[in-house]
Length: 261
Ligand SMILES: [Zn+2]
Image (tube, rainbow, N blue to C red; front, side, top):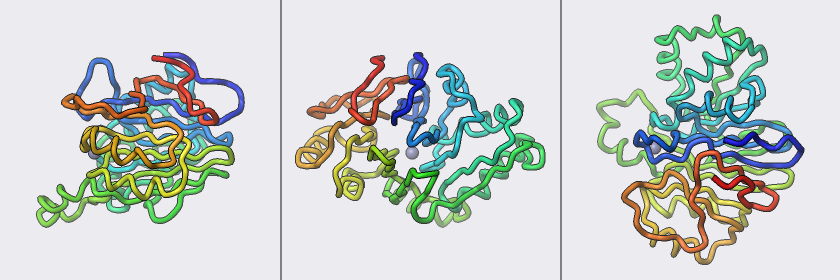
């Protein structure tokens, strides 16, 4: 894996592009963005802390983490990341935004890992996703999607204490605007992300069909479409879209892959 660019400018790295199943060549969902000088992790699928190290990114550099939903492949790397930050001596606070009802059970999980808040040496700010997220001059709009609606319908009554909210993100910096669908439930979930022109759309392709996605994208004002979380059963093509690989770095000013996998 190549090291990330050292100069100024906005870019993202796809740390993990797998489809929810263990895969020898793909890590689980995580994406690192460097925007307006801020370093932001979107989702924390394992082994994100190790992958950041391979890229030459220190855990102390993280200015914030946003978890779109708490399926294991999107949050499984978080305890190890917090443990690593503690052992490396991080001191500054770390804000983590996530679906509101997920905060309590996630903190219980961390206690089971002996990652007590008084032990970490830095403050974790647990912030429920409610309205726009601001990290410096970066603005992240979290839009609820239907990814977990079916799970809520099946299990919500029996397990009411966990959240069933899942979010897609529109991320705006001074010079770029991109969207990350994370996991969705239907192509219609992309509609609110694409109302204004996007330089880049990173969308999953596991819970939707390629043909339907291609049709949806045909008339949308999007500079570049990158497919991640592509289900292994997907056979269809999405015209004009490129498939993501772990370690891909995308320059957001030009929306092009600057380090081919
Ligand atoms: Zn999911």
